[in-house]
Amino acid sequence: MAIDIHWIRDDESLARQCAEWQRLPYVALDTEFMRVDTFYPIAGLIQIGDGAGAWLIDPLTIQQWQPLAQLLENPAVIKVVHACSEDLEVLLRLTGSLPAPLFDTQLAAAYLNLGFSMGYSRLVQAVLDIELPKGETRSDWLQRPLSDTQVSYAAEDAVHLAEVYEKLRPQLSDDKYAWVLEDGSELVAQLRREVDPYEIYREAKLAWKLSRQQLAVLRELCAWREREARARDLPRNRILREHSLWPLARTQPDNLGALAKIEDMHPRTVRQDGEFLLTLIKDAGSVPPEQWPPALPEPLPIEAAGVLKQLRAIGQAEGERLGIAPEVMLRKKTLEALLKSGYPDGPYQLPDTLRGWRRELMGQALLQALAGAGETP
Picture 1 (spheres, rainbow, N blue to C red):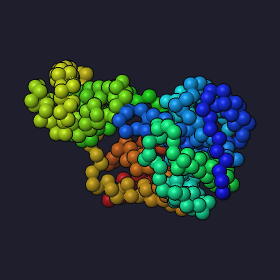
Picture 2: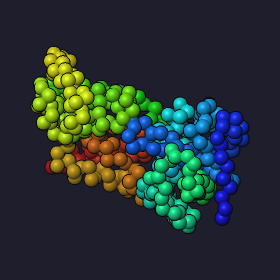
Picture 3: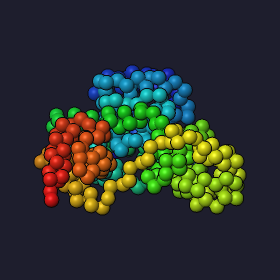
Picture 4: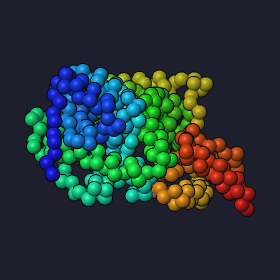
């Protein structure tokens, strides 16, 4: 079947077409981008499927993104995507806006128990019985002109995404449809939340093993790395490698020779930023104790594995009852946060990450299971 492909290469065409799309019940959205040597993704192509054909928007020739931003924000038009976290970053970077309401076909497939975390090709095969050609995903989307294969691949993505939505939507109950949109809204909210560079140290590997004084150093290192990655538009590991953070905070080198010997320390980092890092480490290591961050909690002990299994079983049973892939019911991080809130003797507190329908359906059962676990001799 030949695909109806339309190009949008100027501001006027984009504005005209966005006005048309504003009248539709939904649009399917996809992006192609490059992100090899940069912190931020560079948009190579935006694809929109409207149920009739494929529209390819060239971000290298468009200046005015306001019409697309207005479409993304229109609550009357469902925006259909697939496994969209990076697509959202591309759209936010280009237009300053994020799509809402958001319908993620990967999530919808899980809510229909077709499979968890299904790749796009597998989903198209399962829902439409169409085998997509293998890959242009790793090709250069910033080259011009794009090859015929690239254009065909991009257009097919947009068209089939619209078709997948039209097949999946009627199969979802009103509740499940609302939950897919709720999860989509949470994805958008996560991206909107400003990550405070000074909070990043909490997620660093083995950070819990450090003293409070060492954590003060780690906090500054992580914050500096994050700010510089954004300012220089470079991947974080090009600024300072992940595996260097912990040994830097623990040993706190005071000369370039010692800095160069740190695990996984890149010579380029020592050359470019070595003197600055030594000063940062010295200053952060000298702050008074009242400015040290609090100690981080240790990971849950091995003995907690049995309780975690009990909590997971609540999600699995509820998923079975509702016909939903069990993996989307209760996330491991949420259950661990719940357990850490009071382990081993309680009282326990439902974490903020347990929201919406999950909290409503399973929150009380989780707390009751923990109360019961505490009574077990």
